[in-house]
Length: 194
Image (cartoon, rainbow, N blue to C red; front, side, top):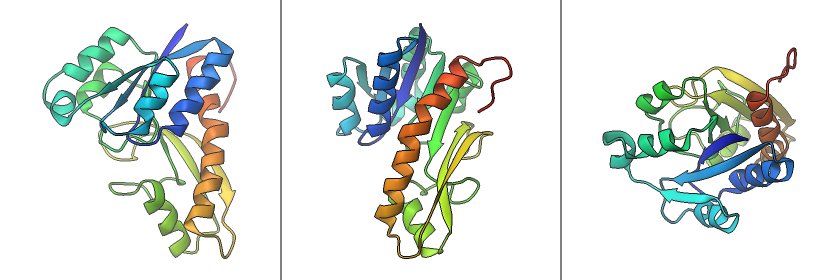
């Protein structure tokens, strides 16, 4: 059974979707959900789905090896950032090379970087009268939204769409595609492409 660890900072709808997807398929399991936000709904969602839910602070993430040591014990096949807002430490990436991925609610390299998350991205897309937006799933390096792109999916942005309209369309792309991309990364079939 492949092992997945999720990092999230907020509500956790993507995390819940991933947990349920693999629970149904019984080919992989989410063993831990980590959050840097003690009040994040993702911790309750994980707890309700019987997944270990752990809160951590900046010191245990960046200064000490507390989070790294828990990850080493968990032995994840993949570390998934699903709405996680802190930059990921190089020391963790180095221990898990090509095993840390992130989802971003825009078509990178557009609308990426520090401060570009959630509604900030969708408001910028609408403000700039973009004709399309989408999601990008990419490997994580020590810079925001900078790692190699694994997968992108697009959705049209109509004239008159609000940031909330764009957000709804993006969430649907995330729910549909993120678990499938994770599965393909965990179980690469010869010749299969994302």
